Each structure stands twice: as structure tokens, then as C-alpha cells.
Image (cartoon, rainbow, N blue to C red; front, side, top):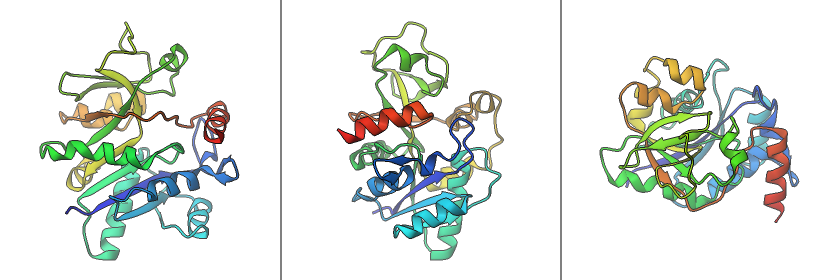
Length: 246
């Protein structure tokens, strides 16, 4: 069977919420919640945090986890994951065939969500997968921190945007929703990704997956049955605290 690694990119310097990986959620830093939840997935052979901040690195080591220091110059989480992967493979002298990127601001990650994200790899043409969740409120639809996705009938992403797309939103429509940042790559495609030139729309929207689409590749979207909420702002943090308390 393919060896599978989950890499959790995290950094202190978020423009919207500086220091958020260490924000307290019910007695634990957010990055610890993410790490512990990802570790519960039985399909993973290894889980590592990739960071450019020693305080995050030390936090993970202090809780008995694994972490890798990476460059502070990465603009995209996918680039940080690729650097961490190459370091780990060189250190261990073995390869991981699938790399699951789980953003460090997804503290409500359920391990079953990772299993869901791996299902499309039964199709050997699929190179990268992204979970897709339902948008349930008008406020979420209009929130620029919520990344909207529209898909074709094969569930490949057509476009990602921080703007409300499509114009006529319908919660029951199967071909659009919000991006959930659980994104598995085939190893070779992740290493190809970092050699692709950053693209105009990727930079404009600040969304990794647009680099894939603009270079002519496909992003397979996989609907998730789980409700989740990423933490982009202080307000999100308060909402997630309440949800996780219950």
C-alpha cells in the first residue's frame, strides 16, 4: 500500500490573525487540536507540522509530536509542505506516495475527513484533491475568508474565489461550496507544483489551488459530510470555541 504522510503547515505571521496557531481553544493551542485530530486517522503513516517559527516547533515537540523547520519565505502552504516532505524523505531515506496537507487553522478536522479526501485517488488520473463543504449562510457566502469553489459535472474545480460565486447561490446545488483545507497530493505532483510559476489569479486571490488550474491541471473536489469551520479571524476563534465546547 502507498505510504501516506500528513503535513500541517503553520506560521505565526498570518496577516488576518497573527499568532493564531497558538491561540487557545478550550485549554489547548489550536495547532495541538489539529495535530491530535489528524493523528487519529488510521490511514496515515506519519503526521508532521511544518513551520518557520521556533515557538510552534517547540510547542509540537513539547507535546510529543513531530515538527520540521522550513523557510520563512514561502508565500503558499503547499510550497512549505513540499520543503518539509523533501527534508523528511532525505532524512528517512524513503518516499511517501501521498501527501495530505491539512491547514493549521482547521481545528475541527475529523479524522474521517482525511479518509474522505483519499477516496478519489482510486482514479489514477487524479493528482490532487480538495474537500468541499456546504455553504449554509448568506454571511458565509459573502465572507472573503470563506473560499468559494465552483465545479464541473465531474467534480473538478473550475474556479476558487474569495468573492461570492456563483452569482445565483443555491445551497442544494452539488457543484459549488466552500473549500476545506484538507488537500492530499500525489507526491510527484506536489514536487511538480513547486516548480510551476506562481500565477496571476493565484496571487490575486491568494489561493494555492489556482496555480494548479491556471497551469492546466485538475483539482478534484470531494464533498464532505462533516461540518467544519476554519479560524481566520478572532470572531472565527470564538465561534469555534463554542462549537468545540458542545
